[in-house]
Length: 118
Image (tube, rainbow, N blue to C red):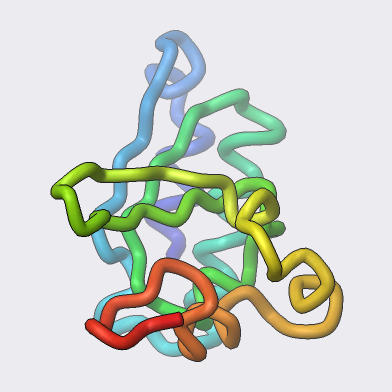
């Protein structure tokens, strides 16, 4: 995790408009390290004004971010890919107040992965 922090503080990082893409950064990270990663990402976006896009399936990492910052991506029956902010998904706003986003993802209330998802 130190490498993330160092790269955010390096001079070239400040001088350029930066898009950071992370594909499954949660693989082989301890849950505690996921929270450190989430804080580093928050620092990059809020303090250094970087845009960060992360592809994740980790309910633990997903729950580290507010629902309005998460996009759910689904493949519809007609082959169309649809993206929605998690806080705009119908019928789950009240659940988002009570449960972690990752828990709702595991229950397939967000971006269901199985054929019989809700």
